[in-house]
Image (cartoon, rainbow, N blue to C red; front, side, top):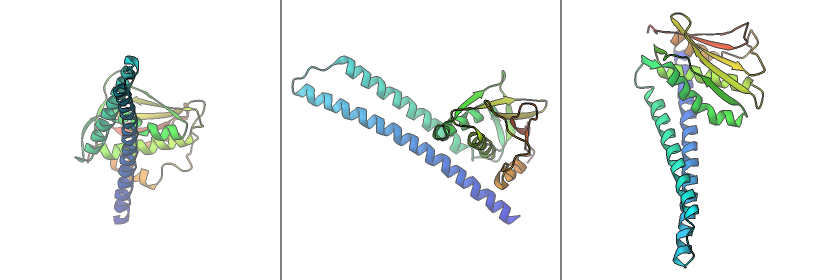
Length: 221
């Protein structure tokens, strides 16, 4: 049991590190673009000092580009803050739609590397559940990454959120493809530990071919 618990902690730390590394990479990209545009502004300033007329359209374009990157950086940092605070408590009520959307945004860089598109569909009403947010993020990530790796290049992973009865579920579907039952490599040992902690289950819908992650509406710790 100790080995299982330690393995779960190690997997959680690796997951946390992977996400933080990805976020820091995105922030570095934003800073690089801002630095490039700042250099262009400096060049225009030097040219103006030499008597070259400034082009207002160029300045406007640079200003707009800087504003876009500042907003992008702000959004990335807000996501990082939400992710970091998910480890604050063992259990509390979360908006499943917001939490899933966060994980989808954090996975977009990995999806780009795999040439996969992510498409998240929200239910008509807000869906809140009592759960362990960080473990749920880890579990959603495992399902999402498995779906991305299973999907063919230039295909779409469709994510939908439903509330059948007193449970909640996330469905991962592949455009033009299906998950086959039984799954050969999923869920792995670490994913099973996360599932046990969240009283969750993973199965394949035989009719739609979707990977379904089932969650209790109120996790009893």
